[in-house]
Length: 269
Picture 1: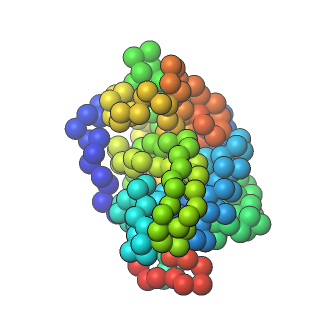
Picture 2 (picture 1 turned 90 degrees about the horizontal axis):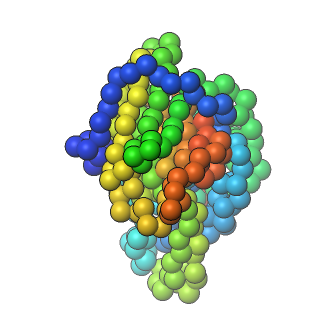
Picture 3 (picture 1 turned 90 degrees about the vertical axis):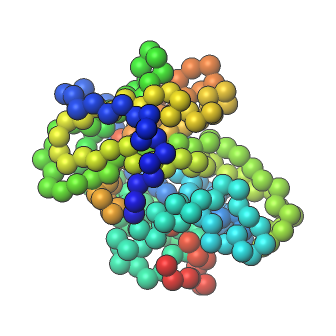
């Protein structure tokens, strides 16, 4: 999957000694969903619960391949669909579907199947994270990403993710016509900000690139490190920016370490 170069021109990436990382390794849960899919609202609601867990970083990626059913999902992007397809390739799966939850880049389940999702989270939590990433705001509102030196054989992508904590839509056509759909942690930016192959790195992301015009209403963001081509996540960190100031904690909404067709009617990627 080719990294999007949206932030490349404004990122200042510096190879420096890594600062000590904060403790904690939450599991990354990626929900691939669509407002055009009537199977998705239960999974969308479930994501609100998952984001409250201290051991989970919850992200909603809206995909675009159900737009033809009559409702265009305003949060959907083609590169989010591409990410889901890349996961399918990495896992050897012939189909993609919604709602799908990919857990820690290694396992997937129907997003509304709470038992299977919880089992996948528990399994991922038992796997030690390869990296303890540091993520913090500088006094100039620059986001500092620190990746420690670690023995690693291969190349990994450092992904920057920004999301809106909550939004909703009144759907007037398609399978969800007449419903108000409420979403949690809606991803609106996914960008590769660097490559890592075991060296210590510090990346400074300037405010304009991180906020993307969202500073007046607050947002969340995460940094994810995983093998090139996707696969099991090596490490992740999440942090929030609240209007009026930044905040961080080890878990949802702030700092913490650690894709679609419908079930029953899959489509090939």
